[in-house]
Length: 306
View (cartoon, rainbow, N blue to C red):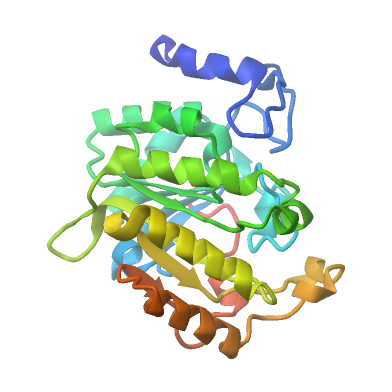
């Protein structure tokens, strides 16, 4: 660790990076809710074709999947890395090398998936790689359960924010992600992200280089909460953001104990949500068509590229 980054790493000695506020000493190997210590753990680093069109394009998004998570939703589509913690421990220097390798593969961007518990290491890795010629955008791809004050450290580091807004109803948030305060943190986080990026920008190929895309993955049976989320985003941020309305929820084996969500989103549910979004005036958005509810959208976490 370069001494210029010590102020960021020192935060790990009494970690309150995320809203869980665990106060554990990760520098000494202690682990909090995310179940990760100070060394980054990465499960996969490769070109990914299944993000929004302005993120993946035709060349792919240089996606880095981190292990561990401060949310650990019961239905997590990346269960192997959020719960089972598959991944390889690496250094910030190696992370910087991975960024450069992805750029050499012509990635449109560096897409950091579930990165919130590794912000100090990411700041160092981005700084190292930019000094070595990294010139593609950094995408911060998060479940949304973030502290706005923590995100302030990423101002000038991150170009594109790709957060979820999963729930507005605190009872649903509590049941499936063990955080009744999800909406209060996620909404403040999105406001900070939008303030940092300002007006979105695209390059000549239609690839986003700056901006915020808020994702909402619809859960089966919760159409009303989904409508409330879309209305909140539209009323609050208008055309300052893109809204990505997703129907790709896939009930994996571990969801069986929650029978009410142990099914896919019906076409009728999804159509009703899209119609609602259009009726209230949402213009900047993405929808999913065709067969998206498939485990093929869940990559193999086999250590590729790490």
